[in-house]
Amino acid sequence: MSSEIPVKQIDPSSDTSDNNKNTGTVELYASRKKIYVKGVKKGFFQRIRNVSLTALMGMYFLFVWFTVDGQPLIHFDLPAREFHLYGTTFYPQDFILLSGMLIIAAFGLFFITTLFGRVWCGYTCPQTVWTFIFMWVEERIEGSRNKRMKLDKAPRSAEKIAKKSAKHSAWLLIALATGLTFVGYFYPIRELITDLFTLQANGWAYFWVAFFTAATYLNAGWLREQVCLYMCPYARFQSVMFDPDTRVVSYDPNRGEPRGGRKKGIEPSELGLGDCIDCGQCVQVCPTGIDIRDGLQYECIGCALCIDACDEVWTRWNIRAA
Ligand code: SF4
Ligand code: SF4
Image 1 (tube, protein in one colour):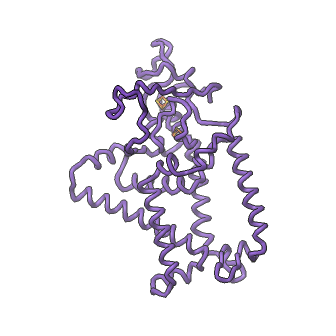
Image 2 (cartoon, protein in one colour):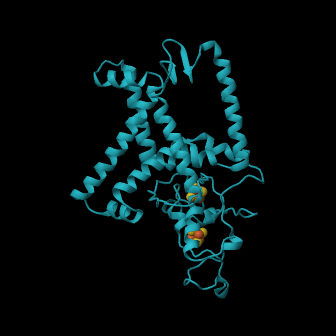
Image 3 (cartoon, protein in one colour):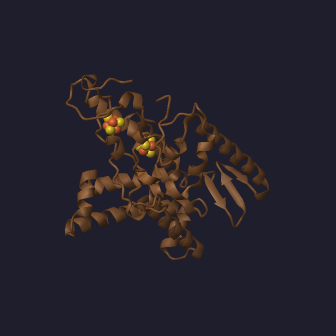
């Protein structure tokens, strides 16, 4: 953590993209460049994420199957206007309790954000969690970042079609399980599955399962960081909760600069360099495709994968810890 967070100043006259040459204007539309995210296998923050992701996924996919005294553990029975939560039944007149719980949860979230920054975005937001699962599946099927880039550039072949089909099938299966589980909190899951596959469920059940399956597949498979950058309102107003003591992921230019390559074992000071060896690993692992060395950016979801990547590099290069 640095005491001063560098902020990148943008000079509009320096924008030399095709549309803006010589106009001194900043183009507000930019087509998306596909991000090939390198998987991070180890690291302190990745371990925290693995634990939180497993716990959250476990709760989401398993709680729907649990029952208490013959009642589902969590069941929002809209036709009967009864809401079963952990063995207690609530009725519409109890909604004031729900409002109270939601208000407490919202204040809790704001409080955590003030202390630890965008931990919600980096570790628990469903968009992040499902995107990480989809990226994990992608890496298992298509291979490492370099292999995926090569595969996308390669001409159509049997291998390419097989890998792409396997990936999209796996994504769709996960999306279907997500959709079924979500609807299962409103329509007891065992009945839902039986009714869906015997074509006896009502039309709304088919609609909502299809809707959540499609939403999961598109958001986690295709849109990914664009949901955080362009669609999520919470991402935009979180910065108002920050104060000078809020923890943020940042690059320390006092330590890292001037960056530059060098041979292993050479003291950076001998070459007049800082500790950053300019390996680019922090950029390659970033799920939003930014370079944290450019300073604090609204695209940063605070996942800290860049820290894990840099830690790994510095461990290999024997660069001392701060
Ligand atoms: S991972 Fe670390 S050493 Fe490598 S470019 Fe990023 S900040 Fe520099
Ligand atoms: S710069 Fe990228 S990798 Fe680093 S915390 Fe922000 S979003 Fe995560």
